[in-house]
Image (cartoon, rainbow, N blue to C red; front, side):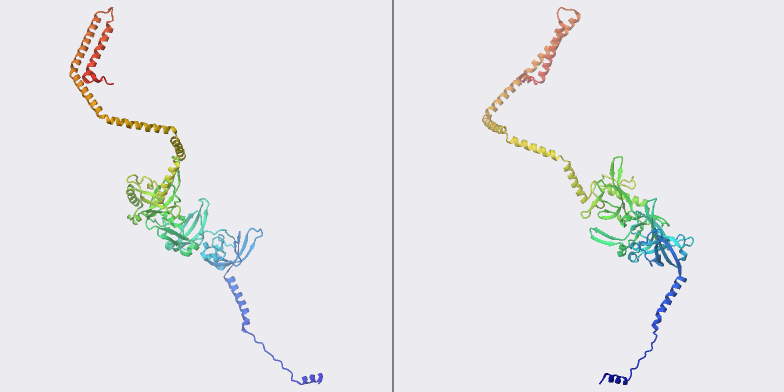
Length: 584
């Protein structure tokens, strides 16, 4: 079979038939133009009816701002950043913003714009994750479309009725616009903003409290930076706590408290308060029923800080309010006045809402005067665990009646102990002993001891000393022999002494019997001599000139008479003088 035959067979076969498929339109194909129409309509409605148009804001730096970043007012989105370019001078960032139509009336001459960077202080964890945005503060004046942005957040207006006060401190720290304000852990307001006062050199924080709690802000109210973690080590062990949980750790709020007694009237808007760094410092400065006193510690204060507790018998009755260092030019010395405050309620003294400060002062002065009279003194307590002063104690460590409460001074002065109590007292005693040891002439004493030791060594090894000791031994032996001989002959010697005494006694008796005639004779002799002298004197008076010297004769006779009379008187008083002689 040839190739041609194969082609013939194929030509007689039945030809294949083509299958025709008719295409059908799916309804899903219309979703694309529908979406396009919807978006177009939304854009027309959004920017045609509700859009506020575009505005231009110039900033010094973009600070993380990006295209499509939101524009917010009181947390709500009111616009979107459409474009960010640099001006021709390369000095500013020009931001084109598309605003909502609802903000058209707020785009005025004094309207302010500023950039808010993410941070915990701007809204806690949510503020940290929200990203950078542009904030707006509505103003007044003519309508405008071009603005110059601020580099810092301004002070906002209060959002509702309430009270706005100004807190003054050395810095804002983590406080920013929107920071919560708390009363006993409850949010009652917010921070409106902060600004620096150039004239006074302090930072002013504007705080808003809603109307419901505005009555709690009074003259004695104290504000402080709250939040954080409180760690306390005491006799009960280690305790930890926080002012407001984890939220206060992320965004530290501003807290305040008002005393129950002597709180004062409510304050008006714009009243200024001091912003304290901690609750302890704020409570130490509270002007409630606490009565202030001052004391002067003789030694160093070891880091005593305001807010440190004041205790009586281990019970806290107050706090340290102020610690200062003062130079006294009159004495050229330094003194450390420590101001403390004591709460009368801690001593269960009568205090009520009708009590006045003068009444509380008089009651406290009377109580403390009696305690000081009994020996109460202010002491500085220290701790073995933690460095520095752990508190001020009012303890009975003084002598009764040695001091008094000085009420003439304002505030009154509580006398301080001469030394600290507890560990402080022990360390002070050790320091005193060490100071006394240091004041001793140790080197001089050691030199004297060495010289004395050398002299003793020389004396001990001296040959002359050995010879002297030998002679002393021989002398003692001779003395012992003499004593032995005297002991043997003491009887005859005693008998001889007694015989001599008896003979002397008999002679004295005989002299006593014959002393009166002798004395009488001597007195007669003296009288005769005196008569002869008188006669001679008369003779000299009648004869002015004589060939012999009668004056000398009279003088000798007078002396002789005087001597005889004196001898007679002495023998009369001491008859034994005839035997013993005249005493020396």
